Length: 100
Image (cartoon, rainbow, N blue to C red):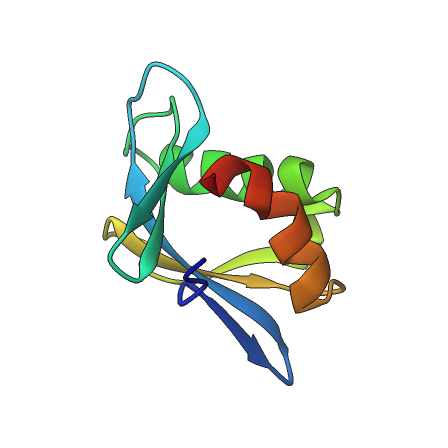
C-alpha cells in the first residue's frame, strides 16, 4: 500500500487530501496521486467543506476536533491536515479498511 499521503513530523502527522465537496455522502474514495481523496456533503461556501473535513477525520480517527487542524489549502481542493496525539501506525490501521 502506498502511504505517500501520510507524513510524520515532530509536530504530528500530516495528511495530504484531495477534497470533493457537495458529494452525495461523506467518505474516503481512494487515492489520487499522492493524496487521499475524500468526499464531503458540505458545499465549498463559508469554509463549510473545510469544517466537514475536520469533523469527518476527528470522528473517523476517534480524536477531538482540536487534534485535527487544517494547515494548508483553505481555498483549494488540495489540503493538508495536521493530526496530533496519534501514531502513524494507529492512523494507518484506522484508514486501511477504506483503502482496500
